[in-house]
Image 1 (spheres, rainbow, N blue to C red):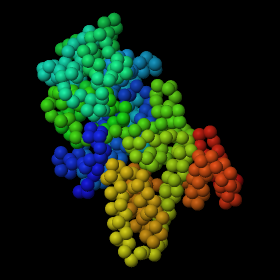
Image 2: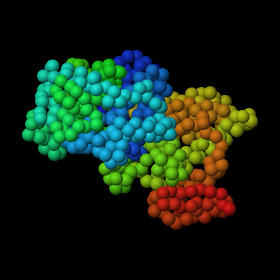
Image 3: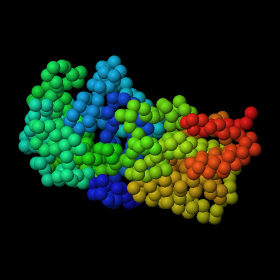
Length: 475
């Protein structure tokens, strides 16, 4: 197998990937809390994780991929204070918590399918694994890592030496209210809840009996319990967003390793935020973009996926309608070329072959593989794809086969591309549209107007809209 290099958050550097078992990969990805729609910023993380999985499959690995669904225990502070997000969401929408969870889980899974994200080997719901979570807490209790307060069972982080290693936390510099609210009963500022007691004055919709009293699991315990059940105490890769590093994933490591005495995960990978000009895309702002919102504005969900391919998963990605339009134009051009190659192949129309075109094909494959194996350098892999598209000396059939091969990682659905009226815009026009978008972004409005005029001379027109541009044949 080819060498693979990944940026490991735990080591704080890029490392060569060495599997626990040769040719096999255990991979756990933190799934959504299903109290609302997942915005496209959330979904950027799942696209990154899909690319990671596809890269391993491309390299011949057998992947066991687990994704959880958080349907209980995630409090509004993301820590140990506030209400359960699921209870808040149910009250907001007039549904039971169970109905809310099912509704938003279904939408999330449909969104991943629309983004051509491969489904995991198993979806695991927190509420289906209460016994496993209680069992893990009992393990921690038996080993002296817990204590009880008036509101629940807590993990005592002072009992382990490496707490905060993942996030490089300066625990001595933390203050109450910065990392975790410090109640009078909490022994250490970094201690976290394993089991929360139900309020005495009301009955929760989701609560269970336990050794310590009626209540529900804390957010962090579910991932450790389910990951270890399906992947073992020690597995290869754990993924999530960068916001999981200082709290959720740090706590997962602490409780898992305290119970088992083993290293929990070898490689931790984290995706950066999708940001708007006003900052991180967030549900707390009240308005956020969903996949359906993009569809309603005339975009293919894969236009957004293409946009995500242009920036490494570990770097912030700026969302703007202009950037999405540029991705849409490029993706449309790519689909149009695929259609051309399909026609040429079907009609046996071939370009003049280079004397060493087989070596050229293998060279392209090697370039692509090296790119994606280098910490998912997908943008470089995409550049190799476009080099193939532009190489007129390669037969159409060969170019098509290479594009299909690369698409096993990129996930752009190129095999399914069919000629559609709305897609049948000449490549030259789409390229000019991209140039105009770039000119507008650079505030070169004179150049943008010149390109618009040129497009009009060629029989097409651009209609600027609030949320993008529409390209159509002049009437």
